[in-house]
Image (cartoon, rainbow, N blue to C red):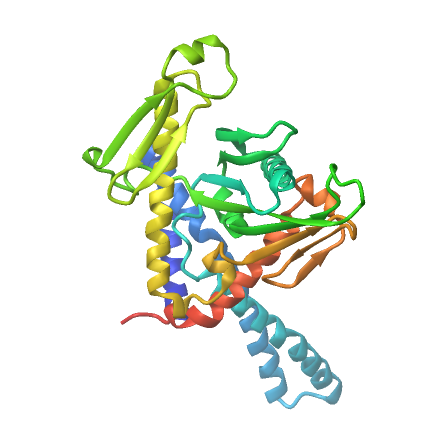
Length: 362
């Protein structure tokens, strides 16, 4: 690991030197590229230098002990050693975490699909609650949201809603939200006061470029039809809605929310690329399932991941056993604590399973 860290530090210093060159400063594109590369290494280098500083202090304290100093100085040195050694171990663990292979999709924007599950109209209302929760979380992070497709119900819910989230770190955080979300509450339409259990599924997919997923135009069947959602008479007269079928996989996506066929087609292609990438990713994960047992990492939608209990005002994430008694603020988008806890659990699991990757290569 330390050979790798030395290599990282050398590369960091090389980039710093390059960024100071006049010809680089005069070339905005090259400067931005090198600056991004340097920024990617900054946290690792800072932590490595912190580790070396602590290691030097430990060596100095041990030298004092070996010199046979007077009892008072020796006692102070032993106390300092007891403080420094756990600190060094902690920083070393943080270094190992920083060196873990990063998910190449973490920097991507995302497409989120929410679908009402069991529970009828109540499930659709819950799907609407989740949609608002994520859009408000996006606002808290300064991210932009864009409605892609929706199938609303009459009383404020959604049978299905698909939307894009654009912003730095969107996928790195929202990827932990894939799965079955369950709600326990008394429905508005329930006169006897009985608690009902409903569910909605959430799928979070990185929004990929054409470079990430190559689609052969000959593999597509594109149909147009009249939009069924409200929008004025002109939407009924023109076939503005678009349905795209990816023939090899049978994947179907449709978009009718825009008034232009061109806009609907562009949105549908974005959705198709994200779905096909997710399918490919899941096929790869299935082949490596023994190495990827963590439910957090796999985002397995066949399992219930979280329960929102209204009578008790609590939210429980079943993957990590985290329970919080502030349901109202969570549904208002304050989910950072849950996401950070999931990210920490994911990191701990990866440290156990992937530490050998950190060993320096020959």
